[in-house]
Figure 1 (tube, rainbow, N blue to C red):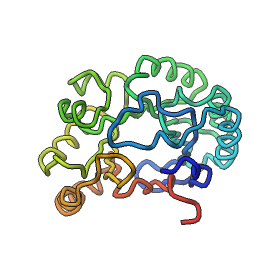
Figure 2: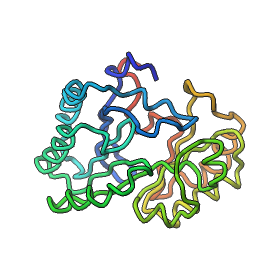
Figure 3: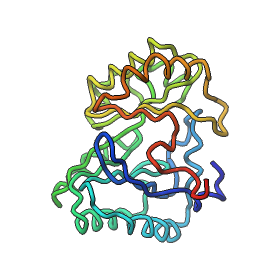
Figure 4: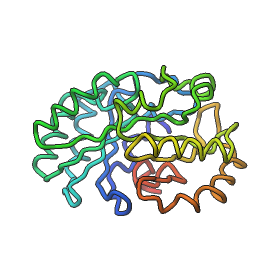
Length: 245
């Protein structure tokens, strides 16, 4: 992801299958962790809060409330959005009849999730908090991916988060390890999103052989599961791709 091209990214979409909702990709000041060895998503960021708010205001103006559900993602965590954007999200939810808000946080912000839930709940909006776990194998996750989650217990992660993202299609994974992660995720979380890794600027790259195993052996088995979102491309939700592509 090239930083100079972030303004040309597609930032609004409507998801019509499996938990229908609108989704927006906003811009904040960047991920505070910024150490994951597989991720360059943090490049979609700016330290100019006024410019971020101007961009986010334009994106949020497209919300219609068609499904009364909104997912807000950004290159980091919800608390890393500027205060004006956070207030505008609340205003848009109230104006458009959004009663469920899906948003994301890194593990390092877990202690802030309760306050976010309470704040929106007082307005009649239920928050569903998502986090990137990537895998429930703690050794692989922390020594190889450097994810920054200091617990080995999926139940502990689920104390703070309702939904989990998994990353699959990377070197070292097997059919068994990927399926184990999916099953653990479904056992502990309301929803699970499986992202198949897409080539980016990081040193860790997708493994075509592992992706082939997923496509042939796991995708057919799980593609219709109502609590699973399977993203074969990281733009499958309709955001993140170039507008002109």
